[in-house]
Length: 175
Image (cartoon, rainbow, N blue to C red; front, top):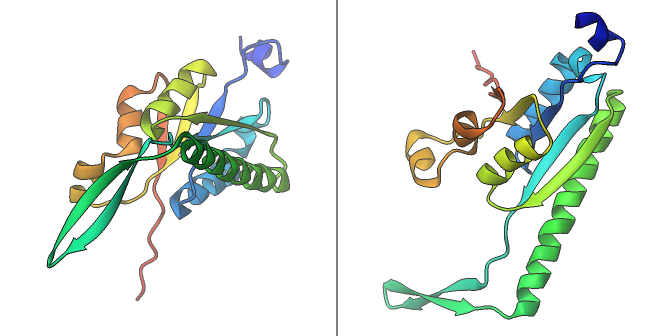
């Protein structure tokens, strides 16, 4: 079996890095390129970006004395399409930048983007593309923020159908 994999007749392991615009995601991608380069040379590295779904409601804050009132307003179909197109353009630009970074390190990359909540979109992409290892950057939210907003990495660790590596950005200590 090991010989079959070395000869290219076996199943290559697929590695996917899920990124967003954060420094933590960039760090995770760079960590993969620096530390797993030998493991990702037989098949392309898959880089994934989740596009947030465009919602049909916009909330405006209106001052009313000291208190604020929030007015949800339904948006027009044109606005929703425009927002979705902007999300798509942003995702494509982010993926192209990541692909260029991979190419500069001699790594072939394939880019994938899906529309949806990042937590579920990442886990769905893992299944759809038969990923063997998912790599994410840790955002570093505190306990309260993580409890309120939820943690994409924690959700993926619990629900992805493959092993998940969460890359934590090392914090430099000043003496």
